[in-house]
Image (cartoon, rainbow, N blue to C red; front, side, top):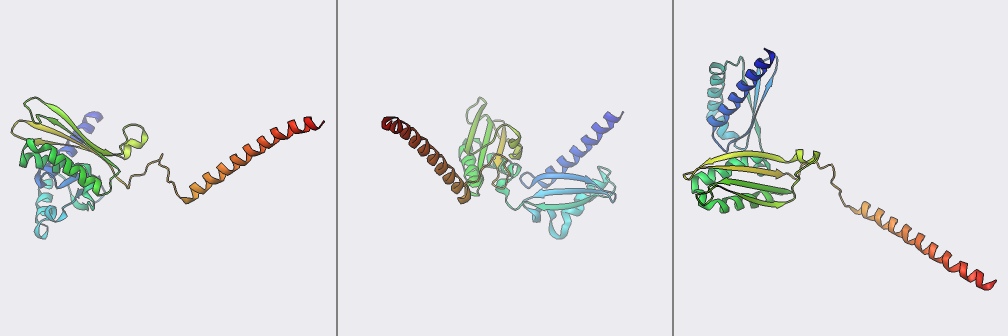
Length: 231
């Protein structure tokens, strides 16, 4: 019974997230986080367009709160807006923008749309980005295309810092799947080595010590035959 309740609870959470994303529109919401407090439910919406989400004088927030109370039976939902300062480093925002571009201009211009998004992300300062498009592009048979630039971590514990997201574009030939992976410059890499002046000085000192040791050994090797010759 407990497992069924947990599954039911997670389904309701998923339904709330999907409703908020679809009601606000594709490309406006990155993540929807739900936290439970003694006062009520705290819903945090991460977006790069807070003005469109809030609406004039908070109209859209009031409407969304009323729907969450009546339709999803939440006791006291409180909506907060988390503004995304750099949308170029948010994989979900960029995946949704690529999807909107494919729906607007058609799948024939998928290379232009993908390369524009790639350059925009890299110009913003990202360490690496990878975009995958799969679907009927541009032929009648489904095919997968990959666009990548920079440094990308695929495996290991460090791969968790890579922001990954998926989206879909509904085009005339069919559905196009979009996957975006972005390695932000703000990501903490455990295996990263910063080469600064102090590190270079240590390397110089070590090289000098090694060189001095080699010279000392060579001098000792030369002195021994000289002593024997004198004898």
